[in-house]
Every structure is written in structure tokens, then in C-alpha cells.
Image (cartoon, rainbow, N blue to C red; front, side, top):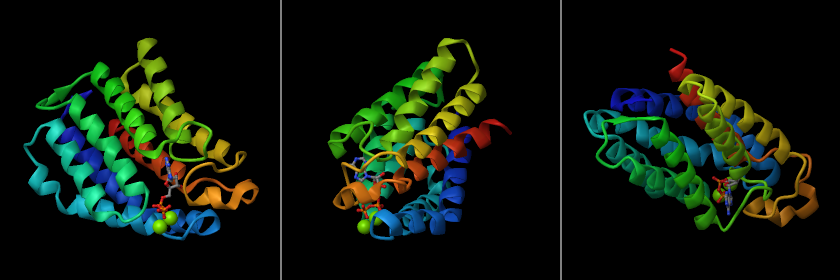
Length: 209
Ligand code: ADP
Ligand code: MG
Ligand code: MG
């Protein structure tokens, strides 16, 4: 997959894209939540962006741990600890590594999802970020098994994440604030699934360069 300068470029692009999507994510959360998902995520990722220089020269595990801890400490909403746990669990897979391979990528993604599931007591079909992340992970793993490169694998993951976002419109929320709405959450896309799609798309964009 690549070295730590690639990871820093990815983190920088995630920050840029999340900050640019602040209004969209907040608007989605206004409909089925409390109008702060964009604010929460932009706050977390601008704090991460401020730490890019300090992360230079560090290994994959260390960089991802910084991303995780920054999200946990700066994001007030549910999404901060959930994404934070995801990044933290991914970090443990690549502790001390300056270079990572496809197996590491798959294992990081797998661990991140396990962490979010555990922390959120949630699963696929609850209308959360997991409805974008799990199909993305499955598509990525399958693409690698078929011998595709990382760009192709992430392209597939991105497409599946987007399908997952669309799928959240068709289901009733069972976790998070949107679950208070019950059936009224139907027809609306989940803000967290949308930010997960943006995060994955941010990886693809850098691999495309
Ligand atoms: P809050 O709901 O505390 O205001 P945010 O608005 O930042 O936090 O994040 C809301 C998003 O977090 C939801 O759209 C959903 O994707 C995700 N989420 C909420 N609860 C859970 C959970 N238990 N498991 C997984 N994701 C969750
Ligand atoms: Mg919210
Ligand atoms: Mg909130």
C-alpha cells in the first residue's frame, strides 16, 4: 500500500474533505439528529490538520493513534469516540510500521469496524456509519482477493460505501439520536454513513494521484 508520507497525504485530504462537507453533514443531521455532525467532524479534523507537521516522520501506528486521540478529545458527539475507537483499533495493527501492505490494510479496516461495533453496540442495518463501512470493507477485501491493486480496491470500497449511504435511506434507525424518530427516520440518509463515505473517498483520491 505505501509509506507514511502517503498516510499523511491521506489524513490531510480527509481533513480537507470533511471540513468542506461541514454544511452537508450538519444539514443531514438536522433532519434526523441534532444538527451538529458537520460541526463535530470539522472540529475534529481541523484539530488533526493542525497536527500534521508534528506527525511527520512518525510510523503508521503513531500517526493513526494521534488521529484517534484527537477525535476522541475534540469531538463532543457520538461520532468522535466511535471514529476515534476505529482509528485507534486500526493503529494497533500497524504499530511501529513505516510501510504497510494489503494484508495490513484489510486487518486495519476489520479491526476498526470491530471497534466501532463494540463501542456503539451496533451493527449493519442500524442506519449508522457501519452501513457504509462494512460494505466498503467487504468490497475492498474481495478486490484484493481477486488480485486488484489498492487503487482499484479502494475504488470498489468507495462505490460500496456510497451504495451503503443510499441504503440508509431505506431503513429505520436503531442506534443513535435518529433512533428516537423511529419510522420517521425512513427516507433520510444517515449523516455518519455519509462522513464514512467521504473518509473512504479521501483515500481513493490520494491513491489516484
Ligand atoms: P450525536 O448524535 O451525538 O450528535 P454526531 O451527530 O456527530 O453525534 O454523529 C451522529 C452519527 O453517529 C450518526 O449519523 C451515526 O452514523 C453515528 N452513530 C450514532 N450512534 C452510533 C452507534 N451506536 N454505532 C455506530 N454509529 C453510531
Ligand atoms: Mg448530531
Ligand atoms: Mg450532538
